[in-house]
Length: 208
Image 1: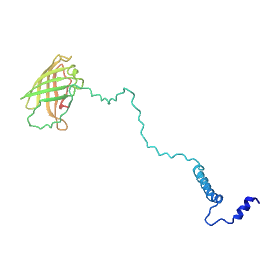
Image 2: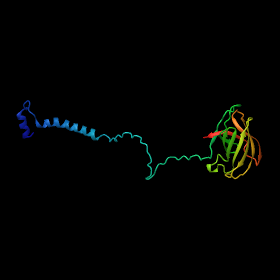
Image 3: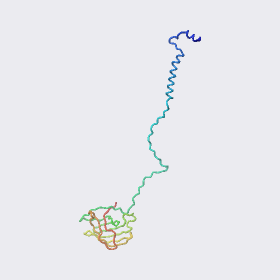
Image 4: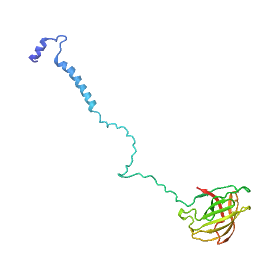
């Protein structure tokens, strides 16, 4: 035993309330060191977690137009024009009623007949190719006529082609005004003389 130990023992027990520096450091420092180790493990001992990423919102992807491009609307081609778009005009035929034949009549020869009635006198101008372009109207044939409407509803007429068309015919023709199978007004050809005509039936129509 050293002289320092004898001196300490000779001093006797430490008074109550006094601190011994060595033991106090151990009582405070050891728990503190353990706490620091636990905190360090908690902070650095866990495996690294990947950062959480919020789900991305779906965004539509559009292809940009090339520079200088111009959006053009769809172009609708218009229907080709026709010479005389004449739609059927169904008129009931009433026996004994006064007739007014003035108007447009479609011929079964592809022509259009412009008719004017003045009393019992019937005038007309007929032109070919009503369903062709306007410049073609009457270029195949074009005739004019004058007739008398009788009490029996026949029209006895003289007619002749004019040089708008390529045909130069002439003659007489007799028409009959009456009903078709459905009771609607029509004009039919009954007889003719001369060079002859291509029509046999006229039906009333109006411009579309």
